[in-house]
Length: 264
Image (cartoon, rainbow, N blue to C red; front, side):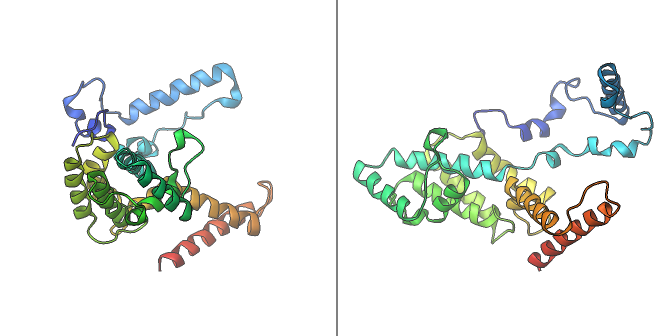
């Protein structure tokens, strides 16, 4: 299944067949040259912004620049959820009668599911999660092909969009893809990414048993929030304080300990 727009993961996978100049391998020498150019540029404006790269000779210091492209760009779990979920929801809604829509809106209100005040009234993350979770109870026409596809999408979300894999997520993706093809809907880039790249990404870049939610934007925001709470309530001090390194280390240790307990 191919989307209507370019897919950065496909582009990277097929880079050997593209312009060799465009996809020239970047060596440590290239990055040293880049650092030197940046240093010269900033030193021309302000010594305070100068980049100290005179001592960079060890190529291992630049390994971060040589990281696999796919490790730098995690699959966007939240955007896949919103994009695919909203696409299927809209496809269902346009086939419903006014009475069915009125009944559906009453169910949404009862379940405390609200549209965003922005983006044309689309649903935000938590609302879309509720819709996929409660899809069987939302008053949708059961024979609608887009509804059936949304039910299959719920199986994908349940199996691999959380922090941990549940059940056979590969089979869930396969069933979703087959149902989506039968729905007659156009394949968006997000549908393509889900069907073609989620399994390889999970296999190559996620620890066994971990789901896409473990590397989502929300997961990182949650970790940052937890770190901030521990720092603010237990160890916060000024950088000039001689105990600052110890306090920072204690904060990291406490946060990691809580994460370990939660995973046990």
